[in-house]
Length: 280
Image (cartoon, rainbow, N blue to C red; front, side, top):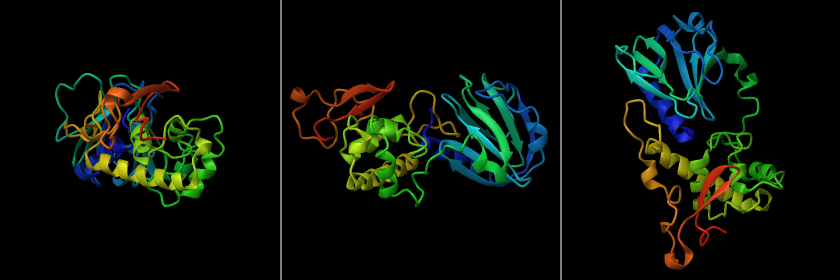
């Protein structure tokens, strides 16, 4: 599933290519996504002009001049393709095509776990999609005091699992949680409530560092993800621990023959990668 850096990359690519274009037409070829695409969507957004683009957690939000906002989630395998004209024929799994005065956006989603819907712009914060969304990593309100207070309530939760809880910090996914904890030198096995104020400050600093690096690199290309121009993100080449089981981590001076290198464990059904020599 595209995580925050991948979604931010997609959003920026759409914003650059399509900009504040007018939506000339929209074609929904398969409305059976995670939630059914509203039948009235076409008539509501056809003819509207795009005002602005936003990312909320792992969602792309496109504000229109008719006070409606499109809400777009990529799901497990969704991607956006930007082109000049509607291709003929369309590719398999091209479910939604949006024709604008500046080009065409195509939503392709083999597994159909994505979401494409709308709500009034003024009611975005009340939407059930966002009512339980935590602070964005880039929000100035994400402070060590805030994070510490949230983690202290997670008495039976590991810090790795807590980082994935979208009602604490919105947008961090499995890849980046492992990388952030590695950079912070915090073991993913530790309980969330054991993390100190100073460690919370470090977590926030390293979260911004890792996410900014990943956005600059265009995200991590794993499995289905590609950027809207069809090229690949390359942050996976910069991973320190993720998917590197048995390898030596970049900063370690341990004897890999004794330590066995980077460890892989499963926490709450998700793979976790870490260096037990550096992360305590």
